[in-house]
Image (cartoon, rainbow, N blue to C red; front, side, top):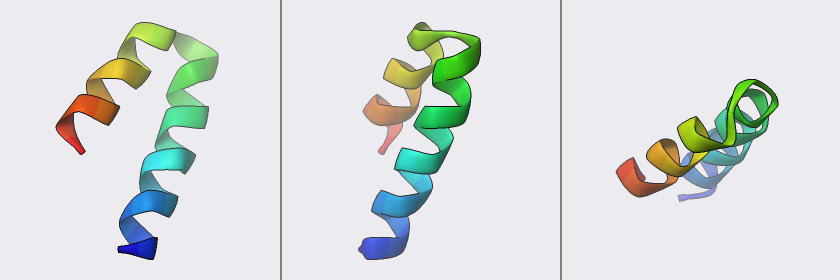
Length: 30
């Protein structure tokens, strides 16, 4: 579970820089 949260946060941060809309998609998928 820790790995999933970490991956989600890391991905959200990277995608957040490009576009917040993508972050929402990642969070919803998780």
